[in-house]
Image 1 (cartoon, rainbow, N blue to C red):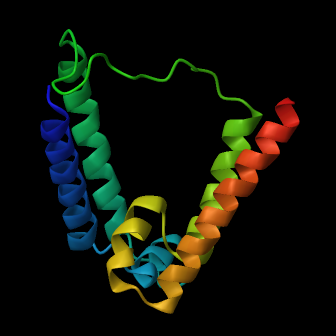
Image 2 (cartoon, rainbow, N blue to C red):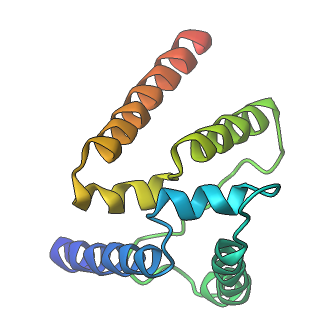
Image 3 (tube, helix red, strand yellow):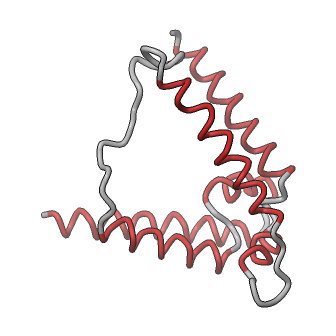
Amino acid sequence: MSPVLRLLAALFAGTLFGLGVSVAQMIDPAKVINFLDFTGTWDPSLGFVMAGGLITNTIVTPFILKRGRPLMAEYFRLPSKTEIDKRIIIGGIIFGIGWGLAGYCPGPMITSLSFANADILTVVGAFVVGTFISRWFLARRSA
C-alpha cells in the first residue's frame, strides 16, 4: 500500500473521529464535567456515546481480526501485555483526574485545538508537559 494512500486513510479516519466527538459534544468541557458530576447536574448522554463505541467495537473487532492482516498495514499491532498491574491502575487514575479537572480526554482535546483559545492551549500545554514528565520519570526509573 502506498504511503499516500495510508496518509489519506489516516486523514479520513481522523476527520471522521473529530466529526464524531464534535457531534457528540465531547469537545465541550462542560458536557464532560456534567457527565462526571453524579451528585449535581449529571448528564448521562456521554455514557450513551461511550456505550455505542464499546458495542460497535465488541461486534466489529472479531471480524477484523479474522482477516490475515489489516487492509493498510503489514500486520496487526495488538498489545502483548494482558495483566493489570500497578502502572495501569495509577495511569488510569491520573488520566481520570486530568479528564475530570480539564473536561478533555486526548482525542477531543486535539479536536478542540481548532478553537485556539487560551483554555484549550493551556490544557494541551499541560498534556504535553505531563507526557514528557512521565516519559522522563519512566526512563529514569528503568535506568
